Image (tube, rainbow, N blue to C red; front, side, top):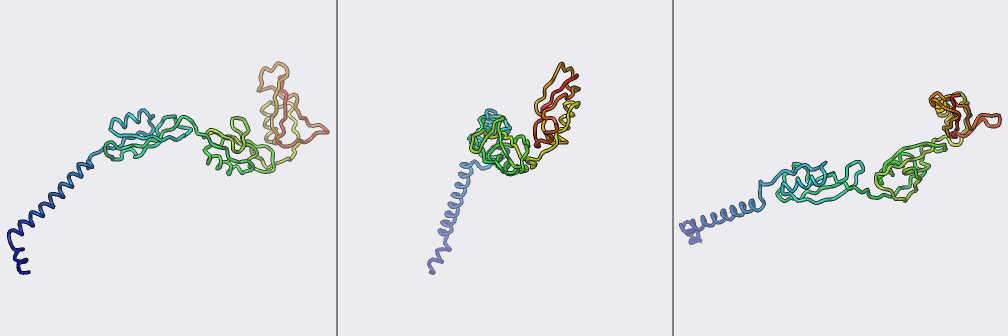
Length: 255
């Protein structure tokens, strides 16, 4: 033990210790600077904003900065085909050279979607179902039925559609709903002598009836001032009431 303590006091030990410390420091410095060089610490660039650009413009912008890219696609009905919808990393993110930027492009072709079963569902339920399948709610019209705001029929492009049929995503679906009035009957109003607009107002506001076929008799110089000279159905002793929603045909004339 005494010899070991004596050795610790010698110049040889101190020189060896100093050399070992210097060696460790040199190795650590070499590792640190080589790692900085390898990872290019502090060197890089900000990702440019390419959202809203078309695909070609976005790619040119990334290539100018030495960035790579990969592409995915979605379909958004109201956006132009080929436009960049999203990017990852986001704009102004600091990245290394040669980093891959992931682009989401709006495709020109709409994928198909199956039409859900909305028959006899409420308007709110039907709308939620339609939108969950990537479709949109179009126009809503009503016809007499005891169930109020319940889907009686769905159509696309004027054609009736059923559950399971395939449609392009983003298609607008029109619905026919029940008005909650069912088979109630109303008195037939007298339209003789009224203009077309006055007849429509009388049918809809007072009786919940619809305007049917409009025809003209004789030479009509001004359709706005032409008046109803005949209507079908017309109130008689044997026919006083019709069902709500019944169409009434009228004939107009300036004479």
